Image (cartoon, rainbow, N blue to C red):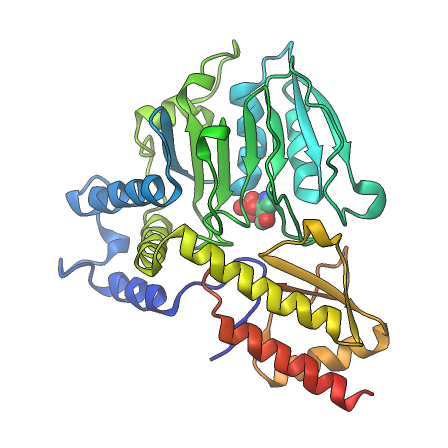
Length: 355
Ligand SMILES: *Cc1c(COP(=O)(O)O)cnc(C)c1O
């Protein structure tokens, strides 16, 4: 077995993969594959209902919010959020903490005015700006909870006088969140909750219906809510595998339990990066991500041989994003702590042989 530190699509629990593969041949003893049954069948409706219920239960989604499973990835939500929430004469506020945040605000410019309240671009996004004021006259304030590429994470969410819109693609279900503090949460499934092909959207019903533009059905949250995520054929298999992953999380004890595991995994890895003379962290200590751990080498010439040793030891997916360089170990929910220890062993072995 490999130790999968890939940033996304990321690791899924082995038992989920096994159950999913069985459902491809024979879904729940129906004699049919999950891939060939109607999305309107009672069997699939039960899958979608359970997935919605698990999201509500695991994340503590209060009354007055709708849970949707849509297509197009988080990148489509970059456009749908302003499409549905930003009046053409209004403005939206954005916190620029990385490339994904930047792509999100670029899409918003198609729909109205955009105010960047703060940015850490000048330092290649190695920290989260904290000293800013959220304009009370904006339609919403958009943040990215975890910056997958740079390895920063909002450890505290801002108190916002306007609806908070959050891209949680790379840390959804990794920690407890007070959903009532948000107007809209969205996440591509493929980092921490399922396979590629489905996007989770949690939206507060009362923030909808406030723009005057006409919105095509597929892009309209209200239409998707009325259709119960089935205005058209939903991504059945991706929803099923996400549901299995949420079941797995529930059986583990839920978000509170995984949060503690994630904190421990991150701590032991950052400790080794700090302690090991060959490596150093990239980001500001207080903003370090518990999901994507970025680090570089004091001597860049050793990067290739280190990657080679990782490969030999079954450590995969740790090459850093091209815009940061070095390494990025993504330690999502499904990655066991034994894999983190395996990486630490390789870092120590490499340091021993490169004194
Ligand atoms: C991966 C990622 C995205 C892009 O997701 P897609 O589903 O590929 O569109 C957006 N935001 C964040 C924070 C991500 O990590």
